[in-house]
Image 1 (tube, rainbow, N blue to C red):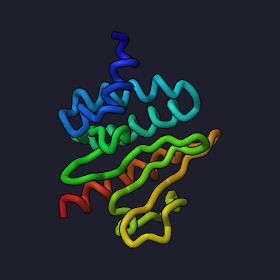
Image 2: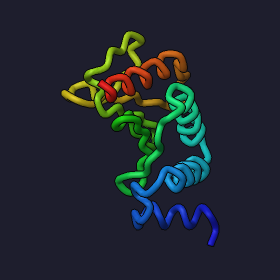
Image 3: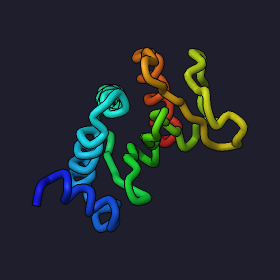
Image 4: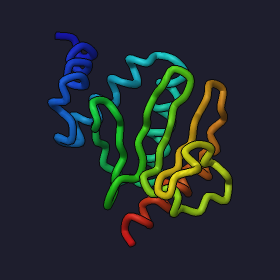
Length: 140
């Protein structure tokens, strides 16, 4: 069975959800490849930035196909939709956002999100700072 097909079956069946960072990382790799467009490239770039900001981050695969990054608790999820890649911070409402990256889910009491659209330039420095702040909050 091809790797992408196997990953798709694991996503649909949920058999690998929450079971080991290695299998989650493979599923995230497969999702990026499967998308094959700007969304895959954006998800891949965000993933790299998360790992650069927090080298000890743990990758997870939850809710039947959502990449999740954690360290001392959930940092954020990386959801992909037709017109947007959404990076949702679990405790985003408690984070300082001096660069104004949060542009979605602003009305909630807990989470905040960043919607990346096609052609969106990522403020890498600000995103890394936000990731580090989320990890610091999780540790506190």
